[in-house]
Length: 472
Ligand code: NAD
Image (cartoon, rainbow, N blue to C red; front, side, top):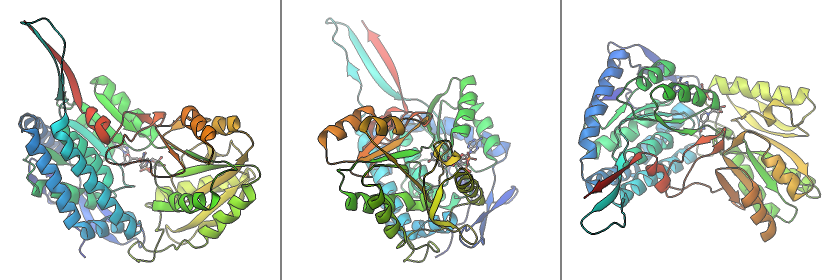
């Protein structure tokens, strides 16, 4: 199956590499160059801004039913093209193709759900004396600059486009330069579904140049970013100059609290699969495992037994459960974090660096709390397991970091479940489950994990401005 032809998409036109600087896109499993990606220059970005301004005026006036029909047709096309898109994502990102297929399905659901929601963007009529009217309208905020990372090459772009387009905004989307093919296929589905020119542009480039240029423009009214805390902070500073609205999804360091009364077998099945999904490069991945004393040894034994069965290989091999990490930055960063943990006294029970960008799943125990991996987002296939004694201690451990995206707990006790739900600081809490997202459910964090939600009504709300109109 062929890797897609790469290009920018501006004002309804696909723009190839001619006359542009390019960068290679590489298969992380083999190091092979898949294609050359054209990079947008200032002229391209200015064209994209002008097109987004025109596209917004057109799209905001498009009947919501029509906007919804385009989104739902794009969902259908994604499902029809699922295999091609899944293979594309695996080639450029490395993940197991069975995961890429799930990602296509999730992306189609996001587009479809947002498409249904376009007719439910209600305002209010306030109670006022006869002969007067006071209305509260919800209107699209304006052209959006959106930045999506490489870890979910299909779903990250789909998520940003679905909500913004449902709300009636136009978009300039910059997906990660490492994984452009899947994003192009998501946009292609929207274009083929009838999205008018100018409503969504796709640009690639030098990230800092692109974001500085777009955020300095008076055309842009809102920034949506998914990525690291450092880049999020940087973009918020840029956004401050234009007083732009922001949605920031900045990663996590999810605690997992496993209580002695948990169904351990079920917890282990779910948690080991969840930990090493996408080679751990998931912002909501279970990361710090805190297990109640008394069941620690059983938990670790069960964890290791399941890890031993995980098959590492090229993502296109149907038997593969875990592919390589997505780029050399991850490989190097993981190497440093695991080395630092061991130097500080952690025990590595299994796993480690293999050839190329491949890792065997790593399990660490006795990791001191000040080890870098217990503080920084590892974003890789490493589980750190330690113990706790009491419920209060467990909640304090869960809340000890500035990250607050996802948290998980496993217990059969209603009292424990209530206390965890109330006490753990996180945008999403999974109790006896790792399923914490869905097209109808808000996805986002607290504290340094960012602010604002994506998906669900809250995700569309983030692209709407409030206007009160008083008539007499
Ligand atoms: P990075 O911080 O360099 O980049 C993260 C993402 O932001 C990339 O997609 C990149 O293209 C984009 N980016 C970088 N600089 C930008 C700028 N000035 N303007 C706009 N976009 C910009 O890190 P990385 O090496 O790609 O990933 C490493 C870390 O990023 C991970 O350890 C993880 O903490 C975080 N991350 C988080 C998520 C998430 O889902 N929240 C996804 C990917 C990466």
